[in-house]
Amino acid sequence: MVECVISDSSFYICFSCDLKRKDWLYNFLEIYSFYLGTKILNELPSSLFKDKKFISKVNKHNCDYYELIKPFFGRKSKHRDDGEYEAIGIAYYLLSKDCLKYLILDESIARNFVERYFPDLKEKLVGTIGFIRACCCVDKNIHPKHAIGILNTIKETVEKGEKDRPCNMDKKNYQKILIPVMKDIKRCFNDR
Image (tube, rainbow, N blue to C red; front, top):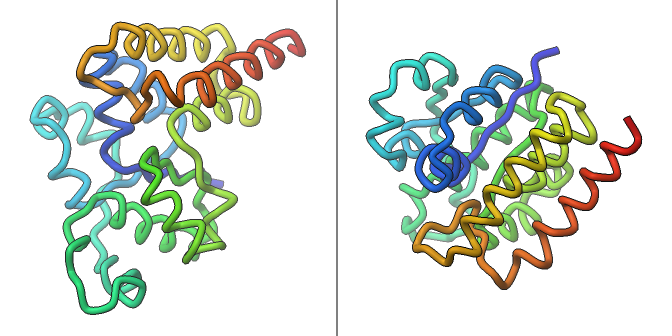
């Protein structure tokens, strides 16, 4: 069975811009079948948008996702161009095809939206950090040392306090999210 993943732009930006590790991104694109739509694609930096290798590794899916989420916003169309909501729409489509493995959203507003209005997607919902943990501990698709290496790089970037916030991670939620996941992965390593 194909394991499909949909993410908003923050996942791609994290690896390509914030961490400057496209090789890690390509590794994930080899393991899972990633989908994105035109809104998400338009939010990506040109270093990815124009990257033929990246474009060849993702599945482009165009759907009128806004019609799916419009009832929850009423008449306002302020979220029509948000990649997070396009990701939710595509995730719902992939779920209906019984091939959705993960919906990766790092922004709390979009995550709360999924939890409130799309309970069927809730069990597929992860952030980038949770996705890395699942790839390692649940799916066993990446080695724990590799997962810890990625998370250490995110940790170091956050600690530097630069303007980049990989995975929307800051010093406040780093202790709450990143450190416990690193401990989980170390336990997975000891279990192997």
